[in-house]
Length: 263
Length: 286
Image (cartoon, rainbow over all chains, first blue to last red):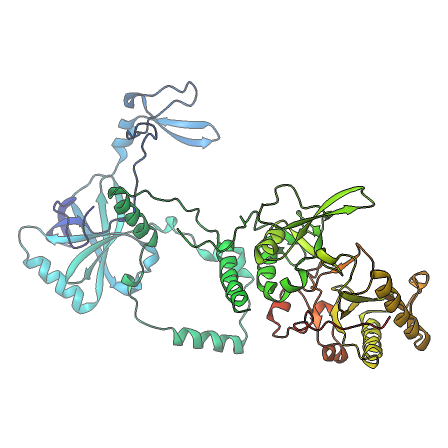
């Protein structure tokens, strides 16, 4: 598990940022990790790790990798079959370029399209990198373009973040659902003025600065405590998690017990 | 280990017991937990008759006198010989919070209690008037009769207490020193009813007249061994989830609607009109 302060050592991609005829050599580092708790599946009886295998649904036999083909389902249980080579041929080539087509206001890009962010670091010379970063910072602009990572081409945004250039891959328009398609929204009524005033007051009263560090992963914290206990050799008592309803009843129960005590 | 607040293991909490209002078993249990401080005193040491609706009140429920199978050892019960069943019936006594919670987890919507305690079963500690309107008479006529009854009892120097039945009627109680037989309390209540019927067109006092339309029957017959009334603060198995609610007489005077008193509103009441009832044991002249 990497600490948040540790930066990754190896770039996952090297190439250049291309704006017209200008090339800025860059390296790409991962910036986003899922640091939630994860577990390995083990065999309960002997503690050995388990692995996945591809099994034929007809005869239940394990299928070796050479015998795996890809099927595109066109109707139920009907597939168009591809060999790996056929698909390789049409995959986009990684041409080691991030092509920026135009510049937009960074805040004009809806965050709903943000996919994953990577740190862009200067490769070899840092002059051009520094120039681009400063220009982005001064203008509040971001470059929109494309990048091919592994075998997939993404729309991408290059922007300034905490004194660095960052590349954020974007979702395609077809990946995002337009909420106006939901029936529920068609029945929305205009709120009454009095109620709206109250709602606005609540929003104003609760307004503040966004602070992501205020949110903690309580499941992760609890599991980490359990891990510590287990390592110390303490047995962990499994408590059935209380359902929401039970929690409500416990609140009422505490209150009633207090009242009965007074009597 | 977490502190354990109750010995009851909750089951099927999301089961809907009142379909019209979508009230779940969790809500029923929560009601009984919240009302317990006011309710438990009335139930103590009385063999209870339970009305259970495990599949909700729209499905058939059942009366239960015997403590059900799987009754935990910490639930107090009392064996009483039943003449009709020709055997011992093992009644539940609800003397503590856990028993009340356990009963509600069994989808017990109503509890009904006798007018005497288990240790002095032949000596009632309440005289009970069931003020029951016959349509087209409604709760309004029943309230009028309940107030007339109170006035009559006041004149005899007897302090009476009133609750809604949770349906259309009112229940009026005089807490008494357990020194009389049921025959004596029954005769006393019947006599009062007869006097009222003589004075008021609206009132009937005899069982044979109960079906007279538009009249209000002052029922004395429940004052008998083995008979019961719905317990104070018990829910009723009706779609509106009403509660048999102890009231101040001033509330009856103001004119109230029994359906106002339900699973949601009763716990919010600050009033505890029957608070003193258990200490205010009076003597009847019979």
